[in-house]
Figure 1 (spheres, helix red, strand yellow):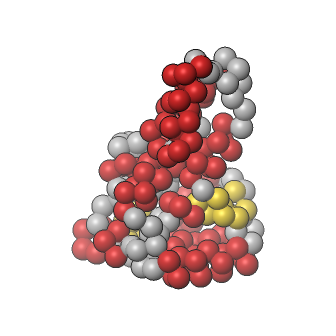
Figure 2: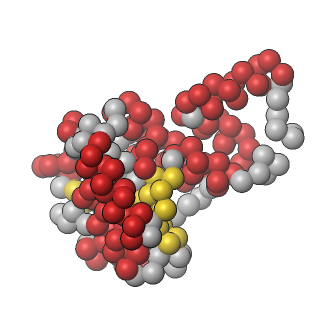
Length: 189
């Protein structure tokens, strides 16, 4: 699916997917990995995701709307959470469907816009607008990580959050490297 994705370049998409995966793992966010017809159509989940969750079994589905696969809807509802965060390919198909379905069911839905992609910028933007109009909340991959951290005084997640931000946080990561190198910055530690 990444070959035909043109709304975001593949390197940035994979980097952002890695950031989201590492943030979810670090903060023990319940995570469900899915793909569509992996062996015959979509291809495997990015290694940047599967390597973070080596113990996870990827649910290979046939439906474009993840929510229409009862294994996934049942698993989501079993988690008993009121908030869902979505990312993936393609925004206009495999993200819009479950986002609208989850909103209809009463979930608070967040879409990590820069960890999604589509066949064109127009397709991605229209999908994002459609979800926003329905009540979904857009965010970025770095925003996701930093909202999970919330406070630099949270020592138990500080080191891994900084490590993830340095590895995948673009200019922000470079800023952290600079601050630590030049000023031995430690954000309150």
